[in-house]
Image (cartoon, rainbow, N blue to C red; front, side, top):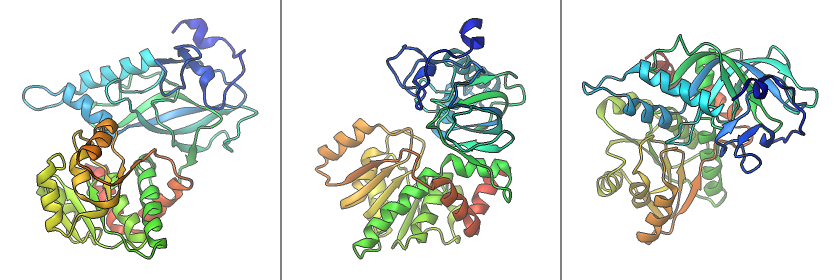
Length: 363
C-alpha cells in the first residue's frame, strides 16, 4: 500500500458494508472476499476507528498456523508464527488466514466516530468487535512485539476500522476484558443453539443434543444454551481423557464421550452407546474431517449446526447425499440478534462454564 493510499482523505462515497475500502479487486468484492483493504486512518462519515488492545485469532486459524510452524521436536516456533501473522496483515490490510479464510476478533477503545455512524459508539468506549478480522481493515504499529506467538490471544497496538454495518459491543464492567473477549469470540454458537432447541420445544419435544468439542469455548457454551432452553439428553464428545475430566461432574452434559470426531464409525458407535443418535448435533471442533461423522451421529430429520471454520461445506453436503441422510444442516454465521448479551449472561449464570473459561484463560 502506498503512502497516498494510507494518508489521503476519503473522497469517494462510502458503503455501509465496506466496499469503498476494497483495494483489490476494485469494485468486485466485499471486504471479506477482498484480497487487500484500504487501512487509512481517515474515516468516511459512517465509520468508526478503534485503538487496538488485543487481537484474538480464531481457533481454526491459529491451529493451522501452529501446525505450519511446528518444529520436528513438536514445539511451535512462535517467532516464525508471529512474523507470518504480521506479513498477512501488512499484505492484506486485514487479518485473514489465507488457508482457512478466517480471522478472529479484537478488543480496543473507540478513538474516533464518524458523524454519520449508526453504531451508537462514543469516543472512549471499550468494545469488542463482533465482526471477523477477515473483513476488518487493520493496521499494526508495534510489530506484535509483546506476543510470543504461542497463544490465540495477541496483545497489539494499532487501529481497526468499523463500517456502518459492523457490530461492536461495549465490554461489561463486571468481567475481566480478556474473559469477555473469549466469550464474545464464540457468542454466535450458544445463541443459535438456543434458537434451534426452541424450535423443537415449540413442537412439544425436548431434543437430544450432541456437541463435538464439548469442553471448548463454543462447545461448553452450546451445552449450557441447550440446557437453558430445556433440551433433553446432552452428549459431549471430547478428544481425550484430560478434556473429559474438565466436563465430568459439571452437569453441562449427561454423558461425556472420548472419541475421535473425524472417525465416522468410531464416533457414531460411541454416540449410539451414549444414547444417540442426536436430534441436534453441534460441531465446534477446529479440525477438518468431521462432516460425515457428524451426519452419521445425527438422527433422521435431525439438525446439524456447523460452527467450525475447519468445516468443508462441500464435504458436508455431498456427504449427506452419499449417506442418504435426511438432515438439516445449518452454517453458524456468528451473528444472531442479542448473541453477545446472551452468551455473557450464560457465563454469569453457569459456574461450570465460567470455570472452564477461566482455566483456559489462566493456561
